[in-house]
Length: 162
Image 1 (cartoon, rainbow, N blue to C red):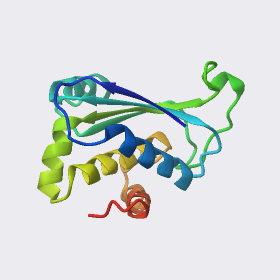
Image 2 (image 1 turned 90 degrees about the vertical axis):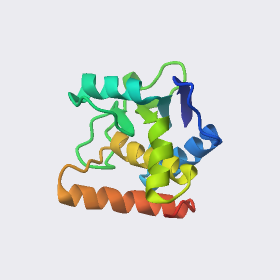
Image 3 (image 1 turned 120 degrees about the horizontal axis):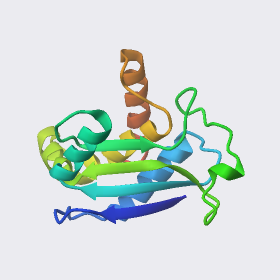
Image 4 (image 1 turned 180 degrees about the vertical axis):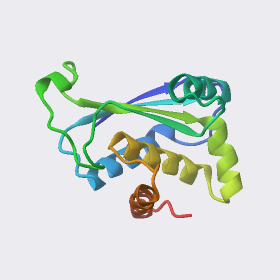
């Protein structure tokens, strides 16, 4: 697994971003039995940047906490598609799984709102987004319950409990 990190905001968290991201992403890939080496791009942005992306890609003109941009099509959550050489990054041999964009300000405010650490909030947003990259969604009640259960299992397994 490889992780490409990009910081597009001056606002920061006093956290080991890369260590947390690598730990959560690897746990998600393992929990879902990802059959290939994957690449994930992770960007940290501010309210204005995520609002712009949300407006452009989802037609929703407001800030959000995290956005996920999957690169693969899934028939069902966690059921990975067949991968050919053409699907792999020719430089790394890994499969680009997708992009995650996290709003740093929301990590802070939501951690305070939910009464847990910024580390736990960042881990939650990463797990949530990784599941989106692997075909999960929460538009229907059954999908939401399944996705929440997977998130909880992954985070609990890493010691990130509420």
